[in-house]
Amino acid sequence: MGGPGHAGERRGSGRGTRVRDRGTVRLSAEDIGAGLGERATLVQFSSAFCRPCRATRRVLADVAAMVDGVAHVEIDAESHLGLVRRLEVAATPTVFVLDAQGRVVRRAVGEPRRAHVIAALGAAVSA
Image (tube, rainbow, N blue to C red; front, side):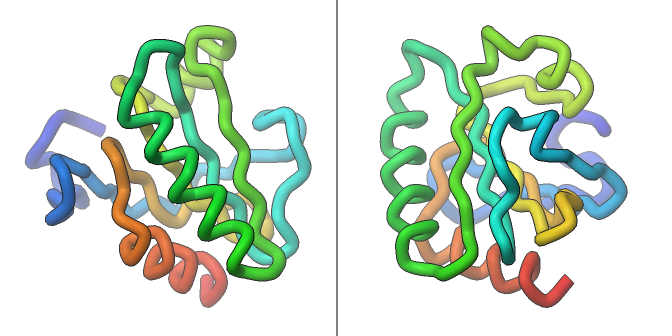
């Protein structure tokens, strides 16, 4: 993976969000420190002084509450540096959308819009 403009990456239309389609990375409940959702999991990497992380937390929690079988897990990036390095998380918030088996089907950097999260969940559920 590279910086902006890397093959397979597209810039989202909302608030500087970068989105990457993924499919080869798999995360387990042990990796994220919580159970996977029955249908999908929203994994958010945050940091203590990240203002967009708070808004991202609200959006993801609201969407997870609206959709049956979807879990939201927030991970403190500073406390999980090994996972941050493995997943090449370079900024917070970074959100991974996992399908029911823990495969990463979407990745976004920046504060997501609710509609984009719902669309990404659609891809995860149909994966």
